[in-house]
Amino acid sequence: MRTTRRTATGAIKTVSMMTVVGALAAAAGLFVGGCSTNPATGRSQLSFFDRDWEIDIGQQAAPGMVQEFGGEVQSPDLRAYVTDIGTRLSKHTEADFPSLPWTFTLLDSDVINAFALPGGKVFFSRGLAEKMTNEAQMAGVLGHEIGHVTARHTAERISQVTLLQGSLQVAGVAADATGAGGVAELLPALNVGGQLITLKFSRDQESEADSLGLRYMTRERYNPHAMLEVMEILKAAGGAGGNEWTSTHPLPETRIERIQTELKTTYADTQNNSEYKLYEDRFRTMFLQKLAQMPAPPDRGIGRWIAIDLQNPHTWCSVCREKASGK
Image 1 (cartoon, rainbow, N blue to C red):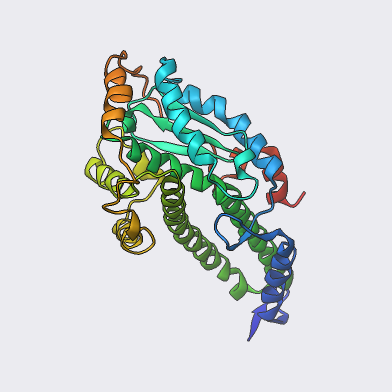
Image 2 (cartoon, rainbow, N blue to C red):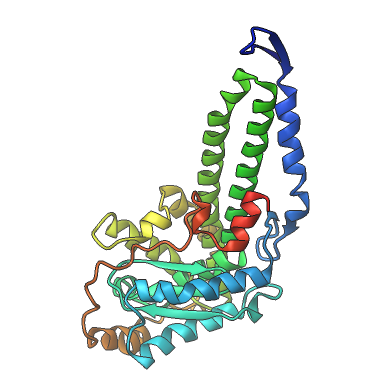
């Protein structure tokens, strides 16, 4: 396909659309070395960032995250309870993931949320914990967040956006050089396409973290049906005030259906099996009753802070910004 464009001097300039296609292919070829097989997921994964980067960015961002969500719950027993569950689950992760500097923080916030930073920093809000009825539910959420870490989702998404932006820049340069108006018109479509790919992958990441969470909690002999109970809790909470989970963890019906399928297939032998427990009594006496005695969390409109805006490289760490800009 060729595009004809009249220049400012009136000359007719004919260019090939393959110029831009070739430019995009060249940009993509620069990043082939960024792919590797993830030991947790078993799939090939694009990532320009290594383990040390993930640990560093997690450690840098963690203090601000804790502060934004009102600090930690001021009870050593409750903090230790969450840490114990998370630590036991992290030991069931693959390859060198157990040696990450894992931390599990119980946030003193009534916002319904849980999230993880790269490098093993996992956060669990008091508001979400209060909605639960057994320890296995908490293990399911912690396992899900651990899954985000072991699947290296943050590094992967930033790498995808970096590649997309680099490709668009190359295409823009090629279009400008050729003066092909038709080519320039393709850029918004490419950008929209990239956004759609990112959103779809985000949904896939959530389902992938669910599957890894089921794996880790089952290895610790928790009843994986509790993961389905968590989804029902979050579904019931819906868009209620303080529910920030659904803004960062999409909850489509397909996720619930996929968990149901895994319970009927991969984890069928765990159902109606006394080896896999919910620990309702222990959770009530050792966690919920003690949490109910704590002062109400501070009301400071907290919990809306986002550590990394994938659409805005200026919010990334300096290393990410340099890679995104090609420096």
